[in-house]
Amino acid sequence: MDAIVVGIDVSKDRLDVAVRPAGEHFVVSRDPQGLRELNARLKPLAVTAIGLEATGGYEAIVAGSLTAAGLPVVVVNPAQVRDFAKALGKRAKTDPIDAGVIAHFVETTKPPIRPLPDADTQRLADLIARRGQIIDMMVAERQRRKRLTEKRIVKSIVRLLAALQKELSAVETDIDDAVRGSPAWREKEDLLVSAGGIGKTIARTLIAELPELGTLDRRRIAALSGIAPWTRQSGQWKGKSMIGGGRARVRRVLFIAAMVAARHNPVLKAFRDRLVAAGKPKLVALIATARKLLTMLNAMLRDGKPWQEA
Image (cartoon, rainbow, N blue to C red; front, side, top):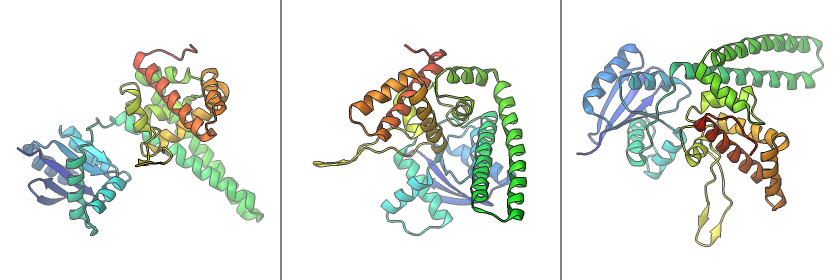
């Protein structure tokens, strides 16, 4: 019997659902009543996977509802789905077509079903994302202030910066309360910050955005983080290995941590210096340092042991 796979195209007000291999299509509203109807229709089908695209947050409530109903959900990368559609020659784009392509993509690629973050982890991730947004706004306002001479506009920027600083402090207090209020998170944070190069902000980002840290092997955790190299080779031609994909915020904080560690962590500084001395470009050495740091952090959480210089 063929495995039953479902693709759901999520929009603001509705959900277009495609079922493979039956070829069934139906639509429900994206509200509590529609979600109850969706669960009721999918439960009897014994589906093996339900695919949704990451759509900037609209998919979260749908994925949460399906997971709570005990259904296997996987959130897929929209760019990969579009590339898959192009490979199939599907140039038209409508919600029912998109749902069918998502189902076909999940059926073909069989992405692993991973547990969704619980409510507390999702809240922490949202707080950390909000902190980053506020900092981005502050940086933008400070850049504008450097270019402007009109006193009235400068005063406006100063007022806005003061308000943003107040909001930043409030969000950071909420993050601190969330982490220190959870014994499990507090233990993880204490383990992570024992490594040179890892501060509280980076540790908390890893806790929220990479909850798999400490539970997967080094190759899979590097791939999730977007710092696993992939080879470009055809015949006798060999291109440079590249990194990409994965979780952007995790990759960004790992690079920051690697830059700090390459200066202040003796083990990782020696590792980076050896690579540079061997002729590796500095960026390649930094990526390798980030990957080695991630491997060490993964082992620390797996074993429940703090950083050891040896």
